[in-house]
Length: 114
Image 1: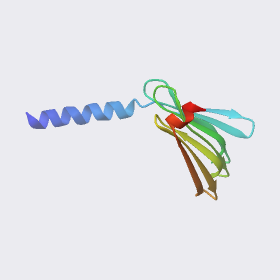
Image 2: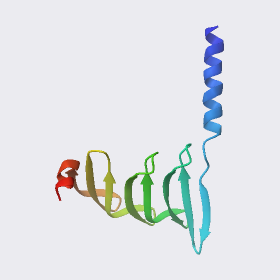
Image 3: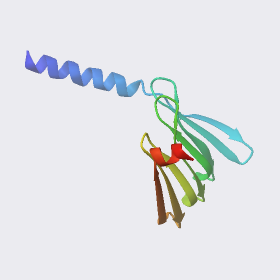
């Protein structure tokens, strides 16, 4: 009986994985716009590829559609200021050559006072 339950769980896992939403790719000039989705249909992340590398602004969302992060890629590398949101804080991360150069964070209660 235990083996049947394990096989059933594995089969369900395989079906769930197989039904994961595939990204939608759209040609926009010399760029390819990519949109990835959660299983619930909400956008997970969206941005562009240029010559097969991440390029330009990318935005990520949580499963409820709230923005989680936004930042830029240049030739596949994280560049400039990125912003990360969660329930408790906002973080600003400066990237140089895809490496973290500086981090600033603000707690949610401090943001609400302004």
